[in-house]
Image (cartoon, rainbow, N blue to C red):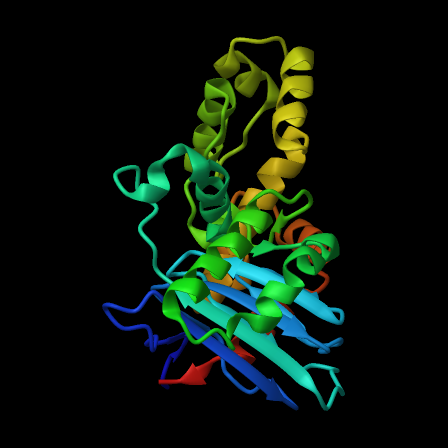
Length: 294
């Protein structure tokens, strides 16, 4: 039996190109789940009911959707699902700028953009007010014939998006294989410990001790810095690793659940359904349906 795999898209973006812009009107989404080496900003209009899958995130979108993806390994797809629109518009911009410290983007005016590019390794979805702020620029981008001015306008789009509030990550860090980062050394120390020991029991008292704090003080501190309590954070990380293994392996659900630190299968199934809206077996089946045999 052949193994189903994610399509690794070969981008049309060539060595000396700066941007690849595809501005399409269509009646349905047919492209399979895929990933690619280059960065991508994808805008979808008039496609309410389409299901967007980015890593282990699965959401049905409304009339407008704007997502930035900057990881070469993060699979994604927009599926037709229940969309009945006859006038879908999709604007896809692919690019591969060097955002390293030694490039021009490593300098101060680009700080917010650089931070956004790191966050978008998990897929970054923008709120409606941000979409409306750059809508006109997205709308006209493909009609700009001069490459310099098209590049200039795209940079302005990225800059405005990097300054908006309310953008949210889609895939979990553990599914997207993204290293954790934090402004706080103590939070980073705890996150790294959890990432390395998620298969085992992790106690609040041990994490508080690792951070050099009392249990109650650590609980408040951790929630302030991550937006979640320690238990929820650990569960989300375990679910991310489990989701990754459901997609990448043929191991049984029981094996995966124990390997990812869940103490029994029924507990794993209950938590998975509560967090993901489907059972682990349904998640695996639905994900594989979006793939093709290669």
